[in-house]
Image (cartoon, rainbow, N blue to C red; front, side):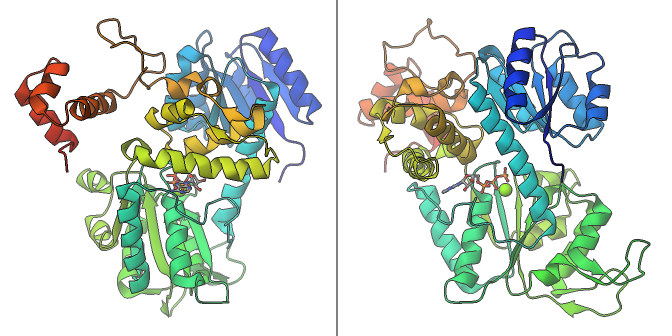
Length: 464
Ligand SMILES: Nc1ncnc2c1ncn2[C@@H]1O[C@H](COP(=O)(O)OP(=O)(O)OP(=O)(O)O)[C@@H](O)[C@H]1O
Ligand SMILES: [Mg+2]
């Protein structure tokens, strides 16, 4: 691992460059900067930084172009985008393209350091878990927080699956919805509760390794079976024996390896690369993905037989915006954790207005985004109650005001909104106001009775 951490800054604003590079150098980073993006990629390649910070808005090629170039040339670095409020939406796209995080201008230099440290730490942990057997209860919650019907239903199902000790489980859901927390929870229920010994929990990220390496990591090998096989090596399936192996991002696994995995799941045996004998495996296999696997099957990117095999025990975690009742308990939970971690006991809680704002936000990054936000607030704000003013604009962008009825004057926030959710939310409010008199609710929304009825059905808003 490198000793001094290196950061490369690219921004056409001299002021930002000099402010950032001064404070990062002071914090012990090795910093290189550029204000022009033309030759930036070459400089990044030769500097080999841990983190690259890219301004989104620049004369072409802009930050997004450079991000794509970095991804295309497979430079191993973490990218943090620098945005202004009006490019926040682009920042979300950037995260989807593989940026590790983003910062909205104007930012506080402490905030920058936290983000860089976090990005570096996350990458370090990711590398560690790819190759090591590791219990990582310290950064994934042990408990699943939530009171929505979806979460209660999920927990019940999880309980039954764990008691039955099934051999393989598939967990799907958008990024940040808690697939890994659920996987760990299942593992704890299955192995940790009544045993004193330590059952292994091994995570393998199927997207992060080249196929051949992934195969040898999973199955192990016999000395001499290929050039680098200097001695026998156990595979992760073997190491997970008596516990759980989590195959993260299974949707990215190559077809060839998929058929080998299917064989493992069906026969419950593995054979090391170059090995002659089959060995029984005794590990629960949990696969997770944020891809829609049945779509991937349709596009012939994922084997149908493997999909069927995996989906016998199938758990889907819905996005946070579809279970808003969970926002408050999660926010309280993270506030407790971070006020303790950063020793900030004077921060007592959220005002009802702040909680309202959090509850109606759209959370494209789901629970992870909420958790990160609360951490930032705990570190950066000196207040005893968190109010709406402490919540950044890009979070509140999708929320509705309690002010006068928005009509033609309704202004689209810079960060955009989740239109479908807004619609659902408004229809629900109208129904509640009209005490489920649909004709009245339709009138409030200036729509026909029939189209309201259609929408109510579509969004599942029938009164119970
Ligand atoms: N219901 C929950 N209760 C408590 N913490 C949660 C819950 N859901 C998610 N978290 C926290 O949110 C963060 C993201 O969760 P997790 O890593 O499980 O997401 P994921 O679905 O695996 O995401 P990705 O697809 O990006 O890997 C973690 O820090 C996790 O501890
Ligand atoms: Mg995950």
